[in-house]
Length: 162
Image 1 (tube, helix red, strand yellow):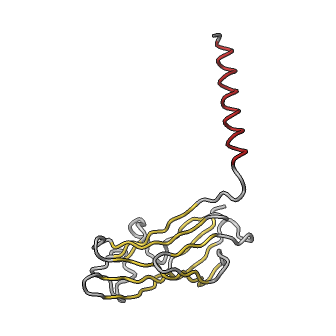
Image 2 (cartoon, rainbow, N blue to C red):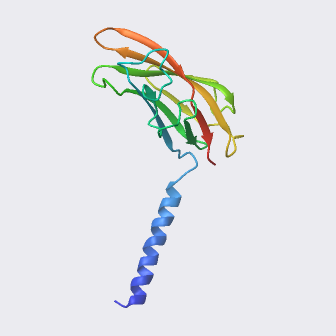
Image 3 (tube, rainbow, N blue to C red):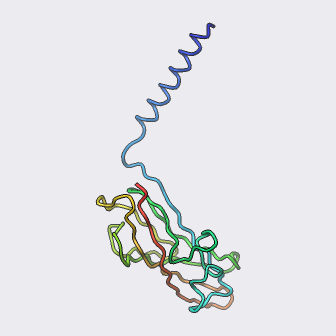
């Protein structure tokens, strides 16, 4: 086969693939963002709940929970989940509420709730790049064996990237 023919066949394959992918994509396609809260369930209390040694989102050293920011886009499904970093086999961390505090509202409701995790969809069509939402995240720590159940609140942010 001549080099020219090979080149034309390759271009045809690429164009057909691109055309197929474009036709199967629609505006309802969304991306997802999972925000995981890691909690030292063995040592957390009301005085140290904001310490990144006790609860964190896996952020870089020196970034407080209050300054922790997750980038999102319009249409994103955001899911908050909790994990015990000290006793994952026995203890559980349930995210039960996300509540808007200030800044732009990103979701349909000012408060999102769940039993073990919380889910919300970024829907506000008036959002622009750089808009942010400060929110509170309420989570419950369940210590297996002691039947201890404690609730905590910390305050991270969301920011629009597009």
